[in-house]
Image: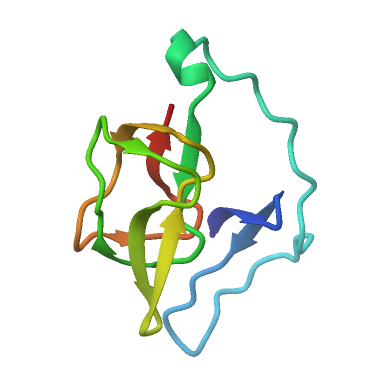
Length: 122
């Protein structure tokens, strides 16, 4: 059983999915299809600069085609941060605020999952 957190239209959903590798699925007792989300634990204290950081997350699973920015670069709201390739479509991930690139978690050629951290802007 794998556990996923899915962010869709600003809401967080938690889903459990079973991996099946053969035609015969193992017998398991029935569980509820959707779990109620657990209250989030407070994050550990972070440096003051990170408090205002905005995280750019992957909107879909796909391959990183381009990362046209570097750490420390100034970006404006709407600037392209990463270009993903998903199902033969190029999907730009744009900055949600004006600031500087604080960290980059991916590089060209990486495969990313939906919701995965791509970079942070401060």
